[in-house]
Every structure is written in C-alpha cells, then in structure tokens.
Length: 412
Ligand SMILES: Cc1cc2nc3c(=O)[nH]c(=O)nc-3n(C[C@H](O)[C@H](O)[C@H](O)COP(=O)(O)O)c2cc1C
Image (cartoon, rainbow, N blue to C red; front, side, top):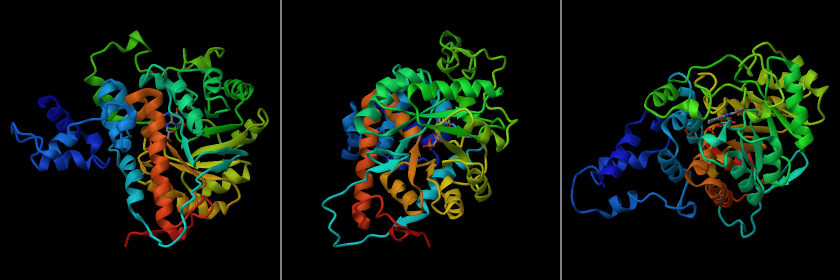
C-alpha cells in the first residue's frame, strides 16, 4: 500500500502529468483515500490501487500509461513523455480537443457501425494510424515487431520510423502487409535515396517525410529523467542513444555525421524525392496554411499536421488548431491527417469532424507496448476504436463518411 501511495504521489507531483489526464490520481489523494494512512481501505482506494495486471483489464489508455510508467526504465520513460522547453505545446495538443464538444443526436438507427477507411488505396479497420516512434526496443524487447503484429491483428496503419530498432524488412514481414515508411531528411540526399528505396523494395507504398525536426530541440524532462537513471546506457547503445550509426536502417550506409535531421533542404526536396521513388509522398509536420499550399504545389500526396507530439518546437499551439487552417487551404484535394494529443475515440471523431481524413497516435500505443507488448498495443487500438464507435453512435454517424462539422461544437 505504501508503495502504491508513493507511486500515486509521484504521478500526481510529476510535471509530466500536468494536463495529461491524470485527474484520478490527484482526486484520490485529495479525497484522502490513498494518503490518509488509515488501515482500512475504502472502496475507492481499493479500486484505484489496482493497476491492470493484463492488457484486457485496461479500461483506457491512461491505465496503460500507469502500467508503462512502472515497466519502462526512467531514462526511456522521460524521453518518450518529454515535450520541449516548458511543454506548453505538449499540453496544448491535448487541451485543443477539450475546446470541442460532441453534439448528441437521438433516434438514429446506429445498430450497424462501420469505422473502416481507405487510405492511399488500402482499406483499414479505422482511421487511427500508429505514428512513427523511433527505437521501440527502448519500451519493449520486441519493439516494432510487437507493434507490427498488433497492427496485423487489428488491420491498422503502422508508420515505421527512420530510426526503427528493427529493419523495415522484418517489420513488414511481421505486419504481413506494407508499412508506411517515415523519412528524416538526411544530410546527404543519397542516404535518403537508399533508405527510401530499401523501404520501397520491402513493399512500402507510402513515405512520410518529417520536416519538423530540422532546427534541433531542447528536452528538459528527458534530461531530468536521464539523471535519475543509474543504468549504464552504453551497455545497449551510444551515450545519448541518438546516434544513427548502428541503427538497423543505416546498416549499409556509411554515415560521416550523426545528423539525420538536416536543416539544409527546401521544398525542392519533394521534387528530388519524387525522382527516386514511386511511393506516395506524405509531408509530416506541417502546421500552417502557407505550407499546406506549398506541399500541394510541390506535388505532395498527403499532409500530416503534426508538431511531433510537442517534441519539436515550442509553438504553444495544439495541432487541432493548426488542422483547421490546413483543411481550409487544402479543400479536399489530398488527405490531411493530424496527430498529437489524441487520447480518446471522441478525439478521433472531433478531428474528423474538423476535416481530417485520419488521425495518428504516438505515446498511447507506446504505453500499451511498454505495459504488455503486442497485447498492450492491440488493447489500445481496441479501446480507442470502441470509444470511436460510441462517439459516432452518440452523434448519429454510422460511417466515417457520415461524420461532419455538425457533430461538434466549439466550447462557448
Ligand atoms: C518517443 C517518441 C519518438 C518519436 N519518434 C518519431 C520519429 O522517429 N519520427 C517521426 O516522424 N515522429 C516521431 N515521433 C512523433 C510521432 O510520430 C507523433 O507525431 C506524435 O507522437 C503524436 O503525438 P502523441 O504522442 O501526443 O500522440 C515520436 C514521438 C515520440 C513520443
């Protein structure tokens, strides 16, 4: 019990939890049901003290987060949870969803629900994409392979990072179908060519070019957690873990630098990339109408409105706010996906009602991975899809196509 109390206090006091939906922790402490030192457990205390012991017991993604905070080592946990600077953007991503409410509708026959979508010619179970997260063995020994198996079981899109800890060939085999490949612009274009052509050869039909990391970043939470982790990092990887040398996708590339997020490129890069691949080119990390217009002008096949989960630049803006201006600019010409702060099926519905074609999740599935491996990831997808169905049913939308701006209203 003491252990549990300490854990809850740690969670409640952690800067990471601010704005991250951990209200139940502080509520429990405020009610004195956890911290009072009473020898008699209240029902609330008992219910709250029980973390899921297996994936199927989790009731929402925050249950997964609570378990993962125990299973993932501090340095890796801090890195994954971290935003940049004071983490205003990280919080803004989630807060933006709270600015919208659902408009309930009644007496619509919602006995048959279908949230499947078609993206770039392939049908998937739902519009929830598992966005690129690098180095997933940091969270579970099976890493991206576990995520691939979960995506196969649930037929969801898996976007594989350039800095994957398993090769694109192995992940594609585990997924049993092509994955989307995420590309960081490298300091030499021939490296990017090699990466892209390798992914294409493995079957990938979509490449997502991430543009939001060109300027470097300041991750204070990651640094704080690194300081309290007394394991020897270099037993498994280089001191910072950010060196691309030794990463599986760079096995046949001779890097002369540690930098894969080169700041040297401009929009011509997309044309250059078009010359070396037949894959659909999706731009990840756009946040403005001007850049949306340029993306279309330079031939992008899709846009992902993203701020890297609040990990790239401290704009203070949530991606849902960015989405509105991007959708207005794109006018349905190419798919617009949004990620950052999506934690509930209702959030998915809100983004779609504002014009998104699909949404991405990052941390939520990594919590599932860290908590219970493949089963944890599957459960995260299952819970969020179930929540999406409930939200759709409540607003009278039976299919993704039926979701419209009428389903939501901006908080007064
Ligand atoms: C630990 C971590 C690693 C990430 N690695 C990558 C990456 O390698 N490439 C990339 O394009 N985005 C990366 N992202 C950003 C995600 O693709 C996604 O945009 C973001 O996580 C969505 O926000 P959310 O975590 O609030 O759902 C990473 C995010 C996290 C949390």
